[in-house]
Amino acid sequence: MKSPYVNELEPNKLITTSFLVHSKEIRQKKSGELYLSLLLADRTGELDAKMWDNVAEVIDAFDRDDFVRVKGLVQIFHNRPQMTIHKVRRMDDSEIDFGDYFPSSRRDQEQMWVELRGIVAGIANVHLKGLLEAVLDDEEIARRYRRAPAAKHIHHAFLGGLIEHVLSVCAMARMAAQHYSYIDGDLLLTGVILHDIGKIYELNYERGFSYSSEGQLLGHINIGVRIVGDKLRGLPEFPPALRSLVEHMILSHHGKLEFGSPKLPQFPEALLLHYLDDMDSKMESMRALIENDRQVEGCFTAYNVALDRAVLKKNLFLNPPTEPPAPPAASAAPPPAAAVQVAPVKVESAFAGKLKQALQPVHSSEGS
View 1: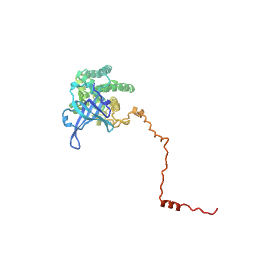
View 2: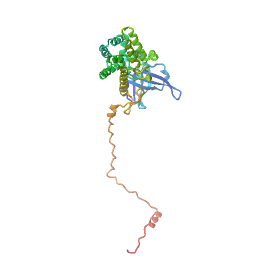
View 3: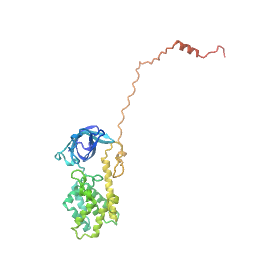
View 4: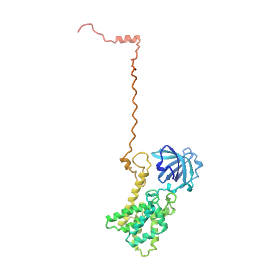
């Protein structure tokens, strides 16, 4: 197990540890010399790092998505930890435990899979149940579905994040379907389970999180519709109108054209899917932002582009850390008992004496 992790780093300490390189940029100082700007990470968070000296020796020694061992000093810069790297070397995969570097769901992936299959087993509509079983019985899809993150950065960006997100939205969908009596619960759950399935191919998550070529060219919405279409070819009895509803839910789940959906939600289950998906993603984004924030001072996180705001760290706001009591001020030592202040002796010149005498008031010799 590596040590220390990002969330264990303390400022003004020289450390030696290992990280996964999330990004690597070669920049230029004002002097013209090169330096490295890196974003390093492990399963607990990310760390900004700079290497100012001896860059030529290591500039080609490692790249993004490599594991590196570094020695350097952690300091606070702009209210956030930053490491100044003194030494760095690329590590071989045999030296590392992948679990130390990739964030993962706190829930067991196999247990979540069993829960998901149980939800599918409870669907009464035979056509929707048959479609879901055809998708999830595919071994490659099942393996990827259990492991995939739900996003690269924005929400549930960890291994197992996709299935955790889907199960969370399923739980809310069941409650919403009970509250709104006109909602088709089976159709809503089908949309929840399939809405992000394209992410299993949109993202690379074997070594860091990035977009695949397919993901960049098509996006998860189009990939998801394609997966459903492939499975429906083996289900000739599936009603065409029901197919249109399922495909529409995948296409419209982002809710707005400017958010990437080619269609707006046009029936209640589609609209409800959008809002439940959006709520779960934003709540998880807030939780992760607060938990992983590296601001040293203050009750607010750094500004988050996806949420378009900084977020209040509520517990810190309500329970601010108590300042340690200031040491008592040292009292002034009393003067020694025998010390006697002696008035300074004034020495007057002869002229000063005469002037003083001339200025004395004249007293009358007559009685009053």
